[in-house]
Length: 410
Image 1 (cartoon, rainbow, N blue to C red):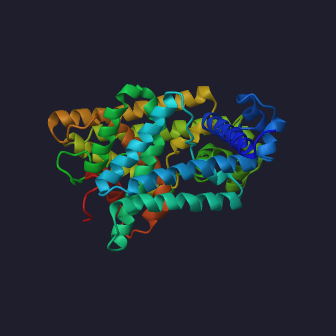
Image 2: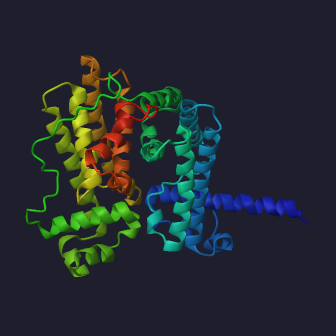
Image 3: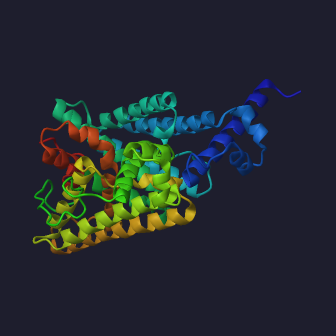
């Protein structure tokens, strides 16, 4: 007869295998496509066996998110035990790089993209977001006790950008061998801690002419443009699964029939949203390249403009995290386009290093930190809305890039 401890151990191991398999499926195909049957098949069980541990799919999905957030919390707590802010940041980055190393070498590791939490039922969503806020609070504490509201806002956005960088790391780490991870880790910490320009804190962005990437309230829009705007905002807010055809149609006060008149399927609209967002980002980059001045001036002008769009434009850029729900073919296209835009940022940095306006950072690493910072700007909309001056909100947010995450508050 088996000992109770052996039975308990076996139960825990099987439950852990189920949670891990679900995590992998969510990262590959999104919450909607993750079914109990697919989870069971991934680990050689039948669906009935899985329901013994998780009677309903929602329970499994919530557990996956809970364990991911618990892992983030554990990493943040371990880093917080270090003596100085720089040591805490370095430790936090190190733990994330080490996790990806272990996963790449075959060890099981649970780190699920969190972008679809807002697609869950409100009761689950509220509880998970409360747990996630505890992670943010710990990371904010890396920088010490804020002296006033202004410093609290600064520390909050630094925590947000640091976490966003680490949640984006699994995507672009695929381009590196694990043998290169120690060097990449060092470069991530250097860029985050000290910023990009040769003269730390230099921030003199110029205005960009054209504005074809902005939403104009004065111009009549085509109905398809309205669909794109509503879908982009809905996906950013609620994730791919939460942005249902019904909700998009209701937001525009049109019928589902009208939606399908313009789009054969929801995925077509999502891909069009990505295409529009990347086209807008590309236009800003190209206009920035034509500016007068050195390359840091050009780059900072582009960053200012894109942050302004993310914070204040009625149609923000689509968060790249929405890509997890796409099929593999579409996902490959989206990641490839994202990498092309990141390489263009790397071009700004390389030319700036040559002329001396940018410090000698690793341009490939820095360009990905730029992408995650811009991607995360949408989530900081409510934070930015608290500022009386929009330019101050943008300058504060992007100060991580212009002077580093450790700079003293102005």
